Amino acid sequence: MSSTTLSDQLTSLKDKLAQSKAQINTRFFGQERVVDQVLTTMLAGGHAVLVGVPGVGKTRLVETMATVMGVSNARVQFTPDLMPTDILGVEVLEDGTDGTRKFKFQRGPVFASLLLADEINRASPRTQSALLQAMQERRVTITGKNYELPKPFVVLATQNPIEQEGTYPLPEAQLDRFLLSIEVGYPDIDTERAIILETTGADDGQASAVFDADGLIAAQSLIRQIPLGENILSTILDLVRALRPNADGAHDLTNEFVSWGPGPRAGQALVLAAKAHAIVEGRVSPTMADVHALAHAVLGHRMSLKYSAAAQGMDVYALISSVLNDIQQRARAA
Image 1 (tube, rainbow, N blue to C red):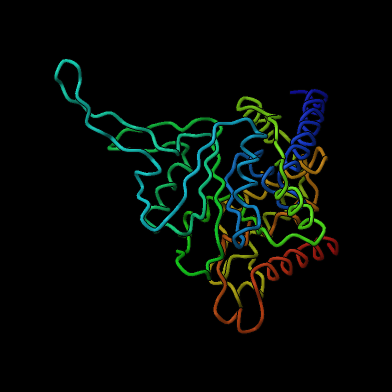
Image 2 (spheres, rainbow, N blue to C red):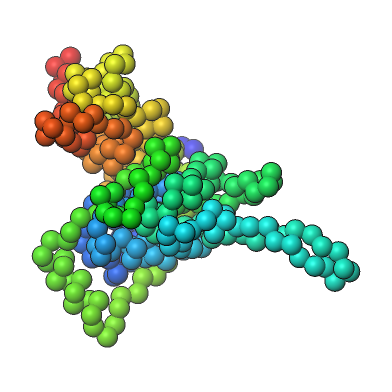
């Protein structure tokens, strides 16, 4: 593809994303960072988990996103008694008209382009892991037979804070399959005022579709064609490697406070997310601003701190910021 054609297509995509944001804002107010990161996830073809206390609009945002993106969607309310077959589907024995009996696979809600896994950490680890193959391979295996999932396929999960009663921490392998972990905090006072007024009146805002399934697939393909500057790639690579304890290139803070760090998938995720985030922000190529905007959301759930970190007031986001800033200072001094 010529640079002119790519530029024209990216400009068209930027316009559609501006329309998408306007439609999302008819039902989900404020929280621009959260909206941008969810759009980034879908454009990058990844999955995201939205973490926040109940009542901050996580589910409403995901439902609105399905409408705006024009894709089929399904919702699974995760509970402690939820079984893997409730998500994937199950084979049932059917009687034919000729008297024969055979098994038929009844597809579960995972066979949708956008799956809302609501309160995912309320289900048992066994049930949570039912999504592992689906999220990585875009297919599921039932009794030895593979079933392809629709394209595109995106999981947007919501999660209550781990400290709440009746929740289960997500397995590390599953966390690594989420492109972003998006923190959804409390709205500011102006946003909260708008939420109260708009959602307690006679009319509730209605969003309209801007994309469709084919359009989203085309956008995801276009994102991968965006060129990446060597300085951005080097910073991402240095950052991921600096966060691995006792490894070549590890930062001093990492060796002191980190139990285990991000793997190669983290670097892939940060590159793709930076490309998508640039378009969401109205730019045609990623900059260091995109790396800074996404480093916490991409890396925070892919590493674990030692107990000593909490004792000394160090959290994972502060550590990532410190390491990233040091890498940039060394680059400028070189």
